[in-house]
Image (cartoon, rainbow, N blue to C red; front, side, top):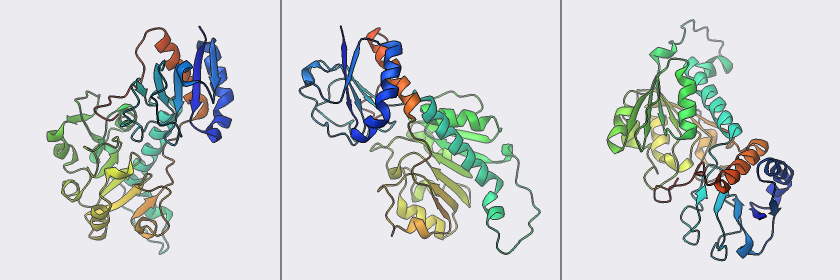
Length: 311
């Protein structure tokens, strides 16, 4: 039987994804019909993005899964009309590699103190070398697919590495903490904190005045995860009074970041325009096709969302 796959991620994305998706699907599920419009009762799979106009899934009575092109699903996870499995993008090699490269680059940047050398208008000759990686305490909040990949990459440098997640994890070279009782021990004395948690009611403002107080004086915060993970006012206050040394932020509560937002002009804040990791069309198309083939073979979907947990 021919599968009907509805691309509901919008016309702009369709122009990018049509050919790569058709090519990927032809390799693993040749009997498919990839369309942008269809009778809802005939649709087997929906390829989705958060800004999709499709919000009412009630007519999609044959639906087997909704496959999100991004890792974030906060705009759809609470949709009560969606009864089919929801899948987020976690098995995309390009997405993972992009995040690992961005995180490793900025952790090393702050570890080595590179900013002082790149921008040095007074020509200060500070001959003190940075500490070696085993002497630098780095904590990663969030040990899902992306967080674990970043942790494993940083572990190769032998950083004094800790991680925190909702459920227990066991990763080589990383002191793993879990649950509400594990958050403060994971943050205690951290000099660099990387935020890679999903956006849920439990994680909103996880970095606040109280948790910031557990960090080492002058610590650096790196957030490529979600904007609401950080209490912006508490972050700015800690930067202003010296409790924090710097914040490198890739995600924000409002995007694009408004021109008048204080992050733009703050001397201790680096703003990057949500580029830490982006879904790559070729690898994402293959991940979507592989998941459809997996589902058709009766195997579990990779990246299936726990609706109660929110990710």
